[in-house]
Image 1 (cartoon, rainbow, N blue to C red):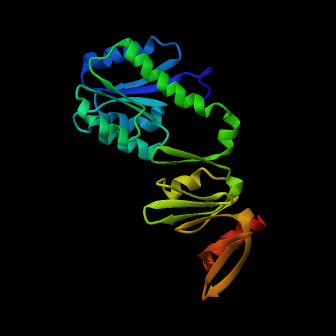
Image 2 (image 1 turned 180 degrees about the vertical axis):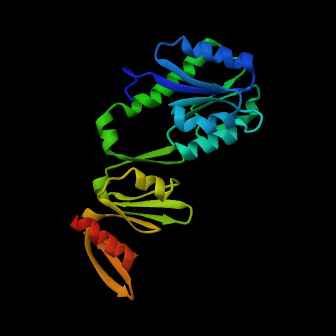
Amino acid sequence: MDIHNDKIRIAIAEDEAPTRQLLQSYLESFSHIDVVASYNNGKELVDEIDQINPTAVFLDVEMPELDGLSTAAILKEKDPYIYIIYLTAHPQYAADAFQLEAVDYLIKPFTKERIEKAVGKIEKFLGLNSINSQAVKDCLVLKNNHEAYFINPADIYFIEKENKKTIVHTTNGKYTTAEPLNAIGEKLDRNFFRCHKSFIVNIKKIEKIFPIADRIYQVSFINYQNHVTMGRPKLEELYSLIVK
């Protein structure tokens, strides 16, 4: 996103109507902000998140049906790159909030100047991503806790699922992330193939495929000692993709 040309899309979930309306009026006073939706609970926001597609959300920590921290956890599962700003009258929730990678944490009652500061933090994160927007688009961006890895897909040998983590094997070493294998696979192009429930391989890095057991094959890579396995059906699927 180019913060100089596009508006920042923001959604609000706050169960107190006066606070919600005041926050929306503050946000709408900034020309580069577009408040795309406003809800009185987290469940409504979660139900419509795919339709409104916000850049950031302002969440009240204490809401009926689905509280702010639970809402944030669901939103982060759907979109690891969404920016979260919490609203609360109780500062003791701050530690839990920042464990869920909050951009900011606002104590009620807040002022317009404090909202402006929170918006500035969102802009800072977006600005980091727009330093070289094309380079970022060309990268596979993975998050791990408070770190972000920018990986050139051409450098990847394969990606594997290991327990609850995903490990990306590259020419520059290994990178670990909590992002699911399926989610990573959706970010990759046709050079990558899901050869096993636990492996995605870069076809361009494959050196050879050879049998090691009945209907089981080993995949080795160019200048890399680690390898993966695949079954006969997946091998046939791979061959059919190559000859198309």
